[in-house]
Image (cartoon, rainbow over all chains, first blue to last red; front, top):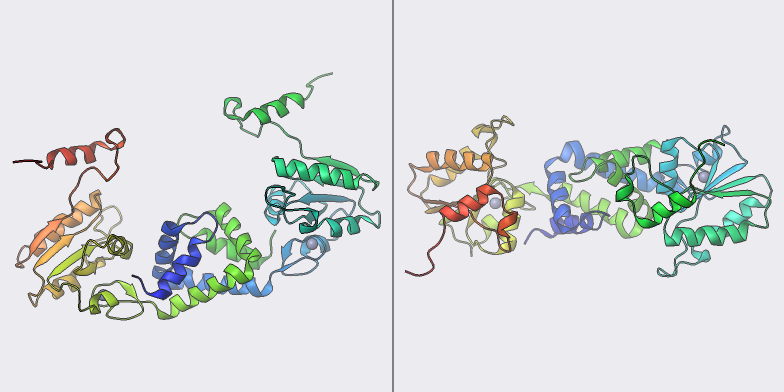
Length: 199
Length: 199
Ligand SMILES: [Zn+2]
Ligand SMILES: [Zn+2]
């Protein structure tokens, strides 16, 4: 019905995460109405990103430089390594400003269901990074899901032989979380890892 | 924190309708991971759309040709005109295949709140289209909102002097609609426009 040019635009926009045919059409129309303010700048930004963004071959972050700015930053702690599944998780931790060491992006989680084994993740490069003995502490910042916990156990096993302090994120009630809205797993974890308030 | 190139991409994606900072980041990462399958084709589709899509100066549809393919289609009925607020509404009616006449896209609705008057809409070109007397029937397919109904009344007044049959879409219970989920306005409209089932 529409011209093939509009159809193609809608079809690709509909494939973006969180969008579907309906929102794809809405975004396409919006872009066509805001040529100068949005469509042209977006085209340019996507082109620039495509041409300049690369994967850091040390930590597997995405950045314009390789090694990335986090790997190059001399003010960060070389002894502490935070392992995340995805670049999105690295970004989230950076936003929280809670961690000042180095990162390692696994590129996913082990998953029997999705047929993702250790070879699909950046586990070999991770073990290679540990060889020089500089890293003394590793924090596993992985999702609190079945796949996340499978990966925690797998890594815990394979990192045992290195002289590193290994920890994973605490589980419990999220900030602002209301108990009667939490799932049973979260509630059990919060109970079993309860913290003593005075001695 | 991120490179300015990634920030700029996220910032523009976040401004798309229905997206925000969080989904903007998600879409950006997805695009950077699917360079060949999604990012490059999307850049090309957006460029093509930007370069080829134009506004039809007759009906104000968006298309690669001006007049658009709907205005040019000789199989469509020249005597019947459907007035819509937005190209999205035209697309929706085309998908339903219920209408085989011509269209006129107003480019919005009259709105006191948003300060949109008749001059901001394509009402002058509409009146000009009616001058040759070819159009015999006009269907106002406008939203069933305050602005939509304001526009219906305004157009009804201004189209009175032309010898056209004027109608607007029926109001009532939407297909599959459950009565106890409908707002009062819809329910009242459905009652007052109830249809007799036998004589
Ligand atoms: Zn890096
Ligand atoms: Zn047209």
